[in-house]
Image (tube, rainbow, N blue to C red; front, side, top):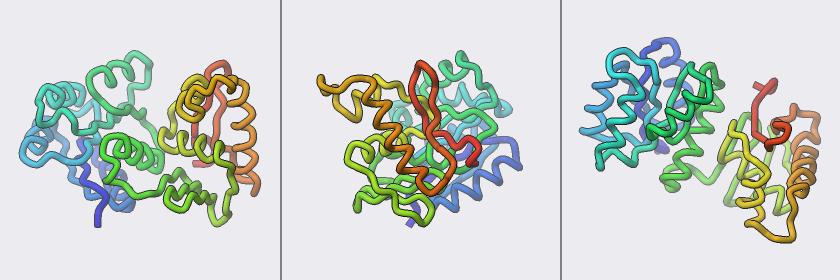
Length: 232
């Protein structure tokens, strides 16, 4: 049984074929159109579970499609993941302010895109996805509380498990220490910001114990992100 139905709005045929292959491989159904007006009509007739929307499509632009969908009550809650070659901060902010739930800049890894799709769906429609989170060779089974990297079992304490789950639910996004304190430690007054750094170090040691590439990127003065980097 498919995990959900995705509408792909992309006029680059080769990219659309690549994305369609990976979306199907991840056990989602996918419909494809190159036209913004057709996408609006499809959403009106049979709303998908998520829309992958390219900003720079011909005709009605992706940003305008997003704007129109958010104006209609029946389509306002459809999750939208914006695809764009425009990676500057003002463009990302504009996309998100227009109503996109997430924004990913080209070029990107298909595996990262699937992880973003599942993360968005977990936030808005938790029943659509399985009880598993994954990123590249890293997998977390929420039901059994088990983490594996490749074929190796990764042994984590409760805090490291919650920390890793936060990263797996928001792959590629920079998470500040303040956010992690809020989501992982629930603003515990006895926990300081430097505790985050200590736990990140422990999490890294556990994840990389087998000599694998480090998937956690440090953004100096800001926080951390789950990032494929050289592991792609």
